[in-house]
Image 1 (tube, rainbow, N blue to C red):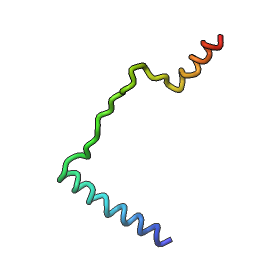
Image 2 (image 1 turned 135 degrees about the horizontal axis):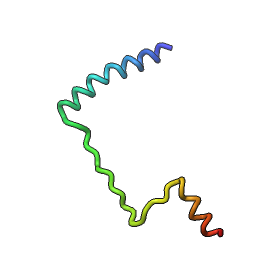
Image 3 (image 1 turned 120 degrees about the vertical axis):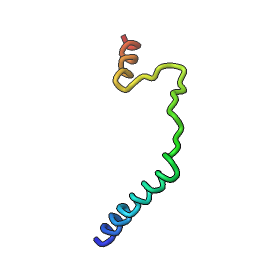
Image 4 (image 1 turned 90 degrees about the vertical axis):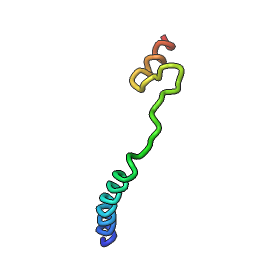
Length: 56
């Protein structure tokens, strides 16, 4: 049970360190999202409609 408190202590101690690093180094870089498919995606709600049209 002592490991639970050690994990919580480590998480609490890392939070100010992370915030300090972000303020010093700037935000975490990420690649902007870009949809590369040349055709529109079929969502999970409309995927079954295509099968129903083909069956009819």
